[in-house]
Length: 606
Image 1: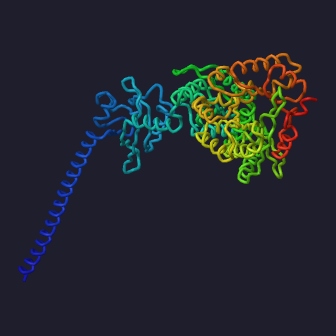
Image 2: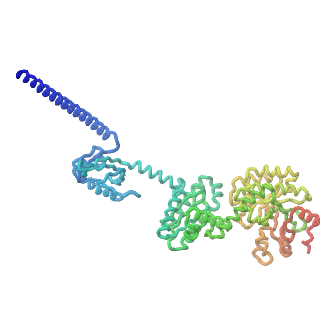
Image 3: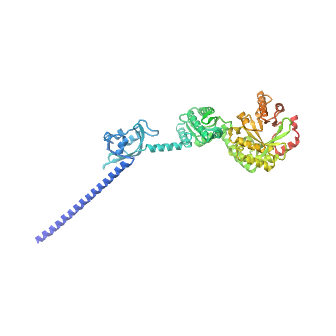
């Protein structure tokens, strides 16, 4: 029995031993497998790291708890341009090759040092370094490593040279904010600096102003020198403005020939006026270009903050209103915004809208003013003059609504209608009486002018020699491209061309030699003081003699007194026009006037 009992105990003990051995074997097997897996994983990691170091642009680095460099990849040493032994074990902040002078908008070292001192992880921290005498930008990312107790024990991180990408980004940002032709700012830069100026005013009360500049006669330059010449002129003007503006001012090109200057006026309320005066003086001088010499002026509108508002859109609008006033006052000058301009703008907008309606409804009228032969006192021509009697606004002067029609583009339709009306009525007059119609520059240069004239003559049965087209000197100043061809084409039709308001523009005798006109009309400003001003008499007499020598007829405008009429007759003036001979009249009154003065104008004998 005892033997059997012992045998059972032996079996149990053996089973325990075998089971324990099997457990140990399994444990050892798992450890071996785990070690093999870990070794394999480490090998994979090392392979990946080696591949990363060999092929990636980034580099690896690691520090100890004192932020001394303890490990780095070969690419790090290549970037540093030093051997490993010179930097390993040294403080990371001490071995970084910080640049003495940074790149604009970037801190060289302070932000990076602050990150290290706080022992916090950081990402994409840019620093400016100097390597081999050249500046470079590094982007650094690092994770703060902690032990099982939560204590900082170093950094593990990566770095990359981002100089090329940063420069590309800066170039893109520059292109987004600058005009590619002139290299000055554009609307984006102006808007951003506007917001900063408003912010400074709100925080510190710093006043500022905006100047809007519009080049005078730029189209003339473009037409004569071509677009290449126009571009060269814009670059030259941008350079001039860059030199004149203040150091803290923003210069931007905001349109084809429009510039804006955001001016930090400081405590001097006249600072903007002084800047505008210097610009006008400088741009009033001839500008030498590769293709010739350009004569260009500039008109400037000024709005000041906070007097004229602080909202950028409001200030730009007010400056634009002031610019409009500068241009209508004669160009080549500056004007400040005032509240009356706002009321004028509202009226201008109203007139533009009502004018479009009047054109559509044909509620405009054409009056006729007689031109009388100074020697025979016989009516020889009638000028068609547009009139507008608005049902609620009352009579509106052509001097007010014609410029609005030109700006809004309605002048073409209006001019066509006036031409057809003039031909329609003139065909009912005696054959020796011509009708004169004014043409705007836009209408005269339109490719549709010749077909329009031919159609108006043919449709109404009016012979071409009875039609006279009047143009002003401003046409010659705006452009000469195609002008000679247009004049020749009209002359071949048999009609006459008159140069209106002679002497009031930038008169050049070369124009009279180059372009063939049939008549010169002396402006009324020379006639009004003809009896009392010897200079006016001398000028009028010279113009009459000049026209006669060039085989052109002469008409004097604004003749109101018998004394003026007698002097003009003595000088040999061909025709007179003015209240003395007759005021502008509706067509029915004018035709009655013709019946009463069929032989000669009786009032000229009084």
